[in-house]
Length: 249
Image (cartoon, helix red, strand yellow):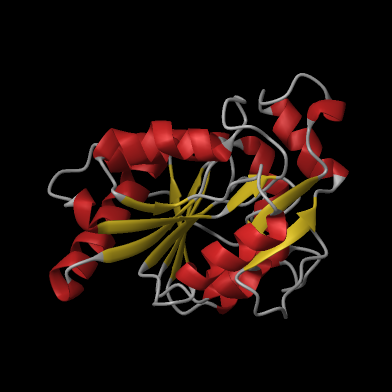
């Protein structure tokens, strides 16, 4: 795993987007298409803005999968990750092939159907973030590191739900759903390349726990350290609690 520290959120987003664009272009050049996994949440705003502004990406040759979604939340809700991706990525660049997780349908059926499509061919690059509690997708601690199922129905812990409220997606904690659909940890690790985007001071504890502590289900994103082609992009604020020297780029 390679950790890169940028001076601020804008620099982080630009550097991560440049690597992501290169990976997508390479996959299209080599195979005629690229399969990607897209993350959501407040931490991805600047990255997606930078990525969608990158030149010379043939987005019509990109097939996109969805990391996670709340169960029972309508598409019209401001916190809907389906709506987020439609507005910030899919419709913005014209992705024609995409697979969103419908949290309003039967969760087991959605997990099975989208999971089968996801597992049908390799993923070229996955974009992920990590949560304030160290979660990867919606795999809160202790995460399941063993299941081979592509998608899971998961219960969201209070720390995760408080983060969603704190980011402004919900007015109260009681409004945050208790369950979600999430891509499994092992499925994320099957991506040929992973780009992890983690800005902001509020992620500093999780960054230190996951990238300098024990690799453990108690710190779900720590598993990224086992991936042969994972690059983590931090800013000075999210890297503040790392003890090993990480020169700012």
